[in-house]
Image 1: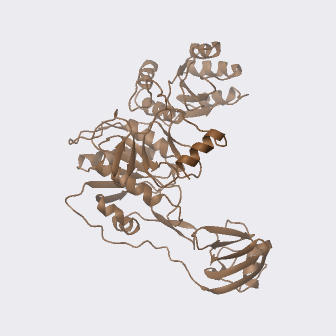
Image 2: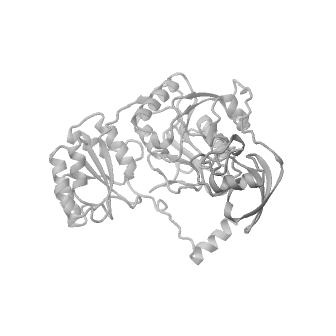
Image 3: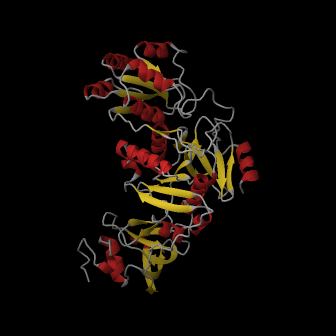
Length: 468
């Protein structure tokens, strides 16, 4: 047995150290023990889980019967009763995926997002389900939707997605379409999914089939996981929808009613943990989707076709930056970008598209140096209107170009994509302000801006009627 003064524990106490290790040794508890823990905060029943070597030394972690994990402060523990050992095995069962000539063929391209997965509690790592057999074992409903083939392009967390991955994805989609696939699903981490969706919307044009990005907010070992729900809906959309665009498919309302299909250039992740985190901004979603099929909410979309014609434009200038303006921003930030060879700057400005006057000279220097500067609004909803106030007019006179109602991230992606093709100012401006795939809309619909405020009497009454 490891000494309680040692910072490392044995395999029986994997990951535990310090006071947490002392508690385990005091009550002869091992990892994977089925225990009842008495504490000053009540009694808890569960399985003792391993901990990462980077976790703190003050908590005992249990997987309770509901399937959730709970951390108990060891300083509150007054006793532990060991009922037995119940080691969890989280290997995903694998079954041969049934193929039928009557079902459409869908290809799942993997980027590293774990749309169907389990946690390996011994290492803290995620075990992804990726092969058709693994996915069928995890989500058997897929076999009723399509014939599924998979290809793992790379395995990165979504924050590490970038131009290299965007270009590889675009090319892989082009090849899959030419090979006759009926629909494409891209498994992706949720944090930067809207960036990748935007990049693919510009790089992959005139697709004859649906291209659906999907992820999950909560891993498959959690009772509230959205993984299977989202994957079923994304696969349904790819296999059966007549919407042949780049889309994001994720949870709709917080209840398990339906998923939403969002246009790739008008979608944004809006909550760090809600399953219904993705929202269409300044517009309405393309469609709802259930296991029964896709129900369009609008009809101005590209239709599925039987041909194999597709345009792949895999360009990206990496020296482009997105700046979120804040009061008292100093001009050296912009000068630093120019000095370091950046070719484009997108600013998320205040109000209708404004920054403070001390930044003006730096923006003028940037424009004179040939840097392409575009303005968006950090309000997300609404349009840049730089001609309303003198400040906006002054900025335009110094070379700043208003980017209509493009979302800041979308304008950043589009500018990088355009600068990968040309550096001519007039050509860049023409391409930036010409709508390609819904990134600029003629107007915001009357229901394009709906942000309800909780706590208000009328809102609370509405919620009681709609979601109990």
